[in-house]
Amino acid sequence: KMPFSVNGILSALALLLLLWRAEELAEACSCAPVHPQQAFCNADVVIRAKVVGEREVDSGNDIYGNPIKRIQYDVKQIKMFKGPNQDIEAVFTAPVSAVCGVTLDAAGKKEYLISGKAEAGGRMHVTLCDYIMLWDSLSATQKKSLSQRYQMGCDCKIVRCPSLPCEISAPEECLWTDLMIEKQVHGRQANHYACVKRADGSCSWYRGVAPPKKEFLDAEDP
Image 1 (cartoon, rainbow, N blue to C red):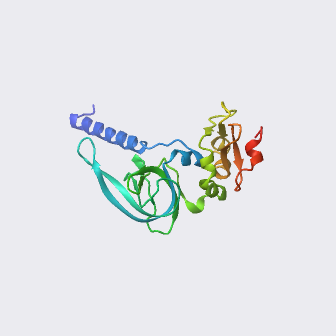
Image 2 (image 1 turned 30 degrees about the vertical axis):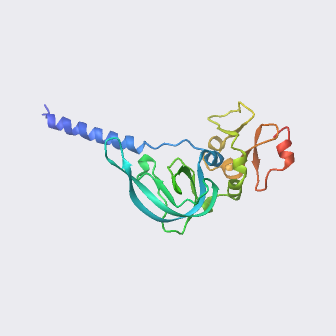
Image 3 (image 1 turned 180 degrees about the vertical axis):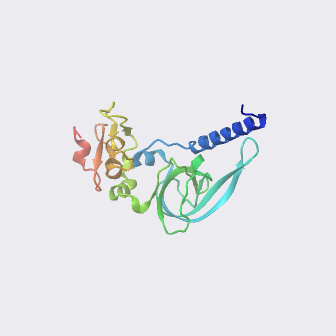
């Protein structure tokens, strides 16, 4: 017979609990994939910027009195596509990815597209669920769409196709099929299309860098 001890059982239980907590933390940050236009429309602030500094700061206390830590990234804003009437100077995020913290290169050499929630005093907060990309990785259409076209489509609804076949249920919807057809978030529609509202109130995918022509906006069929 194998001898067993209460201590042994408690140790095993403690280990199991520790592993379970670690797994729970690792899975704590999960984000639904979104088209870049959805990310733009959902965000308070969308900027192009360089990150020039990084430090850990206290952001008050939680309900138990423990200090809440955040990472503060100092940024040099290059262009604001959406946001308040002042430059963003600091971007805040959680300290670890398990609670959706974002890691950015603070050497000041890389340009980012950063979207997130506005905070007072030229600051914003970002999570892993926000749309944050290296500027050079964006397509020409995406860069152009940030200035006007995505905003034109914020009354439209981009619907993710969960399985084939799938169809829209209302005229203001555009069907996003990248995940089903190409098995990736950054597919053809994400990289090259915007969902634009037309004169009759319906929405349709529009491809290209130039602004939509009047004939497209007035057309009866997509």
